Image (cartoon, rainbow, N blue to C red; front, top):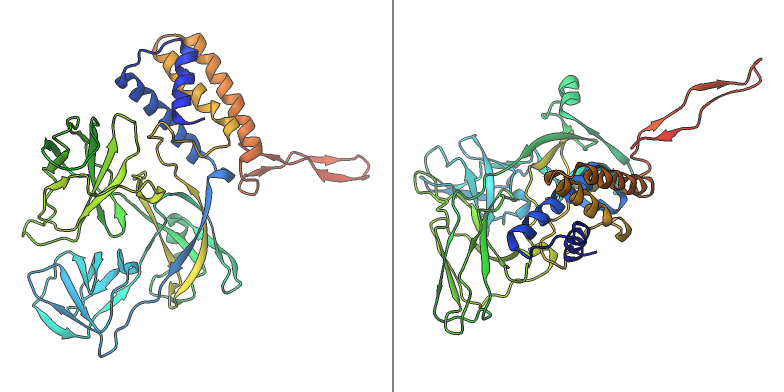
Length: 421
């Protein structure tokens, strides 16, 4: 069932379909709320993914690898070495021995936070890069396991902050990573204001379409939640260009560039389309964008606006003295169902669970408590069947029954184990 089928099934069972966009939007929000809640509540086999998870040794420059910093600035320019994207989010130790967070890597330069606090330097080899934390994938809801397959060390230990505080695993200790420790969950603020959209003459946008726009920020490899969306007027034969303005100026109070990118997303509002990535604005002072139809957004999955929740980070112990690569297995966060053709990442026979959960809320809101209870019961039955088949077996807790004695010492055994959830 795609999103359109789910909404239609809800309307059919309610015997109510006013064919109003606000009503449909409210139904879709309810569907998505239950979809995201159920998807991340348990380690479902069909919601798991595996990705490489690299860790890096600290970077110590050679005499020919230098930096130039001209204050006042947040930009550090390198010579003799090209900064890789993996440095985003790491710590830069400057010639002044102060540590700065790397917000963005651009060519031979990096943007740091805060602004460089000492005098200008040119051609200095007194700098370094250290990795005090690593961001998990953007769609990671919960890490389920780290494996070291390259060095045949198997599953690595994953530890929460409370346990690490009790053991005091000092970050100054270096070597091969054998423990991953839960670190900060970082969230970034969305753009302050909604952009404004003005339709004008010219361009090649499709005729008779209302386009909706929003923006996000990108820094340290993370993307912020989106701004409030804005809808442009419906395009006509002579007016097929949309100009966006009121995008946020991301310079700091001293008018220095911060390295924060602005991303523009667009969706076809008439066709209930997905939010697709349209363009990136790297200039901090630029607050406008012209969409004349010359850019066609890709429908590839990585270009769809993804869920922006607090981004989880981990740190290694020992602090890595080597460039290594582990395997990370994790529970994915589902993307919101946006377009009518979007399909939940569940086995199809369980899509009806979203119908029952939505009906449960709709009936309760309308005061039909008896029907709400009925749909709750049906939803729970489907959920239990889904747990029995698709909940990760080894990730469940096992509860043993009582110890059984055969009498007169004939035998003794534990009762049959049962799985939780």
